[in-house]
Image (cartoon, rainbow, N blue to C red; front, side, top):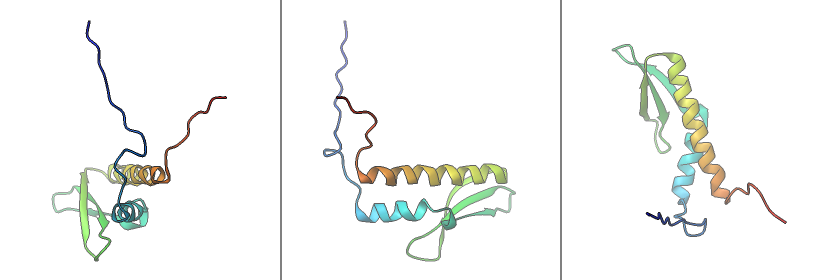
Length: 96
């Protein structure tokens, strides 16, 4: 018989994001900092604006505008969730 032992981390023992990381997450979780550009080969590229300069950083390439918008929406949602967890663990259920 095989037993599997796992180790879990509590919120206090997990690495905490730095202020710089939180600033980046706040920036990238706002849709106004994103754009879609068309490449010479016809593909569409999603990009977000750099925090420090007016340069754009490419992220994904998609074949359709709907696919590119969906990729941006998924990225915005992903980083918004990360920001939510910087406030501490989310209580799902309590017992009395």
